[in-house]
Structure formats: C-alpha cells, structure tokens
Length: 383
Image (cartoon, rainbow, N blue to C red; front, side, top):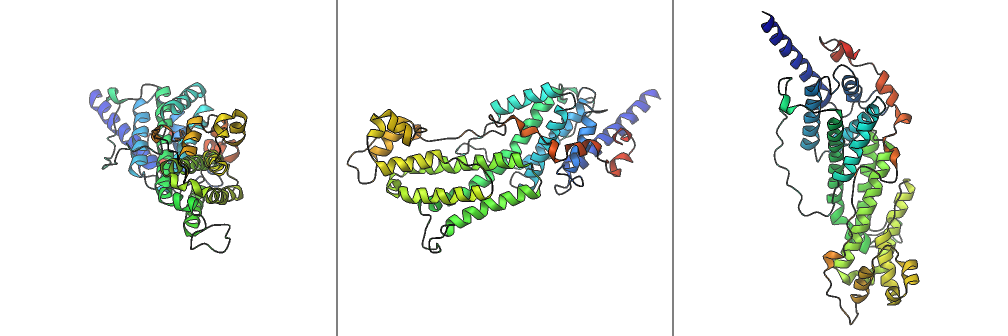
C-alpha cells in the first residue's frame, strides 16, 4: 500500500509540475503583464517556484522542464517578434531576480558564459536551416540523467535561451534590412525621393519604417529600455559593417562617397530623434578615404589617425588602389578585409543591463499569483 501511495503521489506531483510548465511557459500569453509594470506574468510564478520550494537543488526536474519548455517556445517562434521579445523580457528579469535572491555568483558566471559562447555572426553563410520543432518531452523525478545538475547550470542555460531569443530578433531584422541597405545608402535620393527630403527616397523611407516598427513592437512588449538601446546599437553596427563590406566588394561605389555620407546622415538623424546611440565608423571613414583619395593616408600616420583611425592600413590601401577610374588595382583577398561585428547580448561596457529596479521587478516579488495556480493542490507555496 505504501508503495502504491508513493506512486500516486509521484503521479500527482508530476502532473502539478507539468501544469505549471504548460501554463507559465508552453502556453503563456505573450501579451500578459503584471498590472502597472513591465513584468511578464510568468516571471512572478517562475521566480517564486525557482527561489522557493522548487529551487533547482530541491527539484532539478522542474528546472530542467522550465528550460526545455523555454528552449522549445523560443525555437518554435523564432520568426515571431512578439513572442521572442516576450521571452527576452522573461529571461532577463528572471536572471535579475535570481541574482538578487542569493544566486549572484551563479548569474555572473552565466553572463560570462553568454559573453564568451553566445556570439552571433550576422554575416554567416553557415546558418542552420530551421526544421520542424518537436514539442519538448517533459521529464520526472526519476529521470535523473536529464536533471539540471545545479543552479549554475540552470543560469547558464537560461542565459543561453535568452540570447537565442535576442539573436532570433536580430536575425529576422537583418534579413529584412539586407535588401534595403545598399539602395538606401548608396542611392539615398533615388527617383522617388521628395525634393531634398530629409528621409531620402523610397528605399530609405522603407528602411526607417522598418526600424520604427521594431522599436514600437519592443516597446509594446515592455522590453527594458536598456535592452532596446543595446539592440539598436547592434543594428547600427550591422548597417555600418554592411555598407563598408559592400564598398569593398563593389568598388564601383567608391565614387559615391557623397551619397554614402548623405545616407548615413539620414539614418543617424533617425537614431538621434529616437534617442538611440549610433557610430558609423567604418562607412563614414571609408567614404572619407574615397573623397580624399591620396596615398598620404597610408604614408602619414597622423593623417590616417585623423581621417580613418578605425580602418587598417590594408583596408585603406585596398580602397585607394581600387578607386573608380584608378589605373592601379589591388588583388588582395577582399574576404580578409571585411568588417564583421561580434554580437552578444552581454554589453561589455555596461554591466547594468540586468538592473530592472526602476521598472517593476519588486512587483514581481509581491505580485498576487493568478488563482489558477494557487487553487491547485500542491501549489499552495506560491500564495
């Protein structure tokens, strides 16, 4: 009888655990937030469970199932901006709350792991094609090989899945920007441009509308302002590198340095109006090299430092040797000269990305958990 009772208790417990994972992760509504805050509803439930009765060391199967479910949802909705933004918000806030609830060292280690391992190459041609995404198989207490080893492992995987959601948003935006950037920057005042328009031609206006649509959606999903700023700075680095690389690949554009500067100015104006930081160092400096078109940029170190400090001597030499109309030509392998920004969700210059105190995280601790959880047997500890 005792063995039967234990089995029944185990079945009931696993059903309760499944209920939380399904409601708080798998079938979570990405439009629900705690009233008066930017905190997604699942955060309060998951935080109270993971920092209490169902902490990783006490319940490694629950921690594993939460991660499996989050990984599935983020992968399944990789092209859905609303869902990915929601889970960036959830992941970052959970890391913040757990860091301030006794897991500071584990979270710091996880962030170092994210910085080192979770790096996105926006120009990679080796990206895996997404196939069908299978729903996660949730595990039980007896599936010990599948358990999360400890809280440090949980934080690392939570950081990784949060980075994956971030990279999915960037990847989707980059794919939409790619066919627009060349025409927008190299021909900003196309035939459809309004007379001396500050927004440029049709392609430039489409590019700016795209940026604005992402900005509005991220704000609607209450993604913290610091993460939004981080994302748009990353996008500016991508546009900058893309323009520079396109100039190296197609040196016929070296005569269009004025158009490049005009296009850059239009995008910079949008960034300034929307209070985002931008640095178009590669594109602007390469346009200056094409405008000056003098070998003193190679021979005079002070001249190079003043005009193009962020370009290598090899990059400058290649541009000068391949100016449109030039009699000289460089046969250097252009692939070795291309700019490729590293993208990570951890900002190396700003450790405050995890600081949400001004935006309602205390409400996540104090929030009233929805009754569908607290009225269920076995979840009384969430009250």
